[in-house]
Length: 324
Image (cartoon, rainbow, N blue to C red):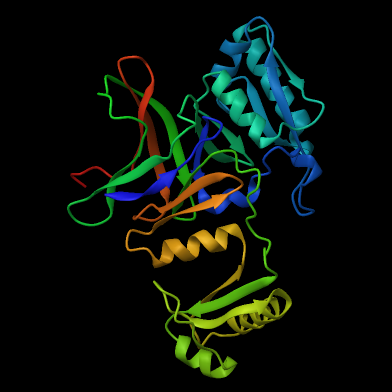
């Protein structure tokens, strides 16, 4: 079943939890754009004669680069690595980068080092290179006999598959995948047009709607109560009022969302309206694909399938076994 398509102008694709794209800074240095509530962090490279062996046995992150170590934990972390090397006789050490590595460069480093993934603030990001740059790649899903999907495929070619290689697992907390190229132009939380929506739902949604004078939004795929296309300041005030009511609402059960009109909001509106819970969006010259997992949160194995020439033929995300 066709879900949509992605494009890869750089030939490099990122697969991760789409809800965490607010952590993605593209070509910008993470420390330069770090939110005030996020502690400063440091990136390291494992160096020395036994660097590969030491990094692999230390097993904190893939490859020889270690990202986003909180600054307050640097002394303990470097001491732990030093003890690890001394106990095993490895000649290796941690070399601190003068500044944090931009996320786009982390993609390039992972691909160049044949590392299957890397971390952004603890969130696993899977990446693969060598993809076609001149055409869209279809994204398909295999239905489960009961409900949801068994697999999602990013189809690279129709060549026969002769081998597969594991790329690790996508850890998902927001029930959605994103498949995307560089993402330098992505705006996750800020309203592009100065507007936002506020919606709420739940057991007592009708009573809360009466209290707040809200109406049905008529939004395809969900049609909750709330307000659409408000100036962001007004929408935020509505969200704060709902939050305050929720804290004192022992007699009222409901949940709400504050949705600024960002790229994330736009694509998720299309996802919610889609029969297959998937949609694509064009941002910064690339087509980005969002798809709900169909079974909620979890860890989802990813494999790349190769043809006889050693080129990627498809990327497969396992959602659940056909027998489950």
